[in-house]
Image 1 (spheres, rainbow, N blue to C red):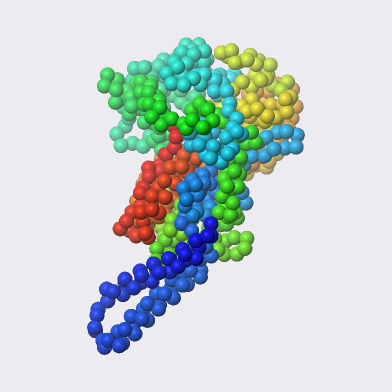
Image 2: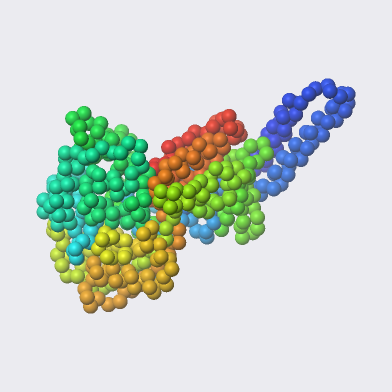
Length: 598
């Protein structure tokens, strides 16, 4: 890391002097006697040299790029920059890397997560695990097992294929034993009026989108597939992914890839009324072509796109491996307090650290910290970034980007305390938890948003005679969860488990883990796109400075990992082409909003 520090300091010093000397060259010449003029020019150069020296004395270290925030986005970005030969420093305010990803293993054999529980397999994740030498620790779930929805006292499977690649997988999704056709004809989650309304939107067409309107998720789904599909299928899904309110979440911003299927539908010449099914099939055909054109490397672990995955010891395996790889390029418990422009180009990042105030000089800086953590930090260089925390959106009564509170509560019960019932479509007995987990529509009176069936999803998560459940509770529509005691929250979770999964005489839960996230997941609500547009416009005036994070590039684990890979290319290109950041030489600007793998 420090092999060329002296040379870099010297180069910085001379660039600073040259910059100051250039400024004086525009002054009037021969206005005073030559001897006095020479003295003045020397004095100016001395002053500039003094300022450059002071900058270097203030900076404890100089690097090519600082990455602020050691969550999944920041840590994977730092890994890719380091691998690309960039002198990078990764700083994190907490005492560990991973952000909301934190795994634990108890003495009695339970593995539990404080935050997300799994990822949908994508090339970016497989690639980085291979590069770090942890790909032998992958575990993948059974792609054929569905998510379940609790409605009217019963669990109902959502349509799911069997994980086969290409066209075969699409046929399984449509016509398989748990496919769309069987869901429509024999499933009991939707009433017949609800099925007919959904079928019209899927196979015939729907009303056109209101021109110029940023639709909510509820408005979009209801317009295309009907109210019943929204209430019983999409609402619980949105609660499970965003812990959000679909009546304030923007469809275009939060679920942009799904929203674009409508455009694909209308792009089919004969599909005059935009039947959504055909748009989805067209996009799947294109996606298969894209994947064939850019196949996974032959040395990577074989995987199925979208299959749920993790690591044997939990998701923290990834950030821990990155921390080990980066070694002293990682600084923990470093809280960013200010970013300033540095004389001669670049930026100064000032931190409160366990060893006192530290200042880093850098050519480029990327923030992946949460929006609420940046209040005031960027004011000296990018005051326009205040839209992240201060933008008023009267239509949803919101100021800035909202992060609702969510509790992740992990509990275990003996297997024989679960209901002894056979589930639909041949999936077997509920006591074996054959599925990804269960979702609870808000209309069902269950306070828990959803429950992941951790012990059946991945091997080795619990002793053989127990089922392990990760429950999420709270979110945008239940923010008062943060005011309850741990005992009260656990009681609500236990109540929900008894409503959905357990026998009446089931024993009290064995509480394995509890974590309250006061500011959990950024909400992509109405007006979110305009916030990002304002940020991007301001960013273009500050080459070498990027304000990113999962409020901009997607909240899912694969979105964050893919961002780390793609944005490293942008930063490296900037460092290779820009001598020093000036407003006249804007950096390459990626499409960050709603980025991520499909």
